[in-house]
Image 1: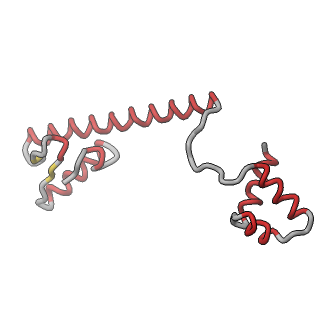
Image 2 (image 1 turned 120 degrees about the vertical axis):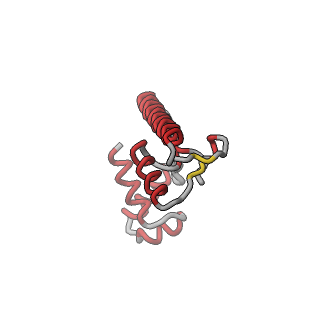
Image 3 (image 1 turned 135 degrees about the vertical axis):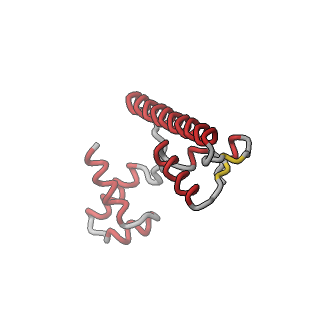
Length: 131
């Protein structure tokens, strides 16, 4: 049982191969978004319906990928937010940590006092230098 065909495989060929493997094992396939009915791939009509629906599912997936790629490209071009994890520490806090480390404070202690991992200041030092 699968809710939608796009959850069954990545491509029409992949879904057809899986369907054939299931049929050879005597396993029935039920796709819920097709009305919950049995998709009998052992009959010519069932096989045709499954093939068409698998091709449509692949097309829908490719359209979604195109939309996502276009959206990300537009956001990058506009300098917009691409999502992801927000930085917990400001550049100012990182510069303060760098001054303390440069003044001789142990990096592990500075990081611990500021509530960050020991790797964070070094990673962010590099990021600040690059930009």
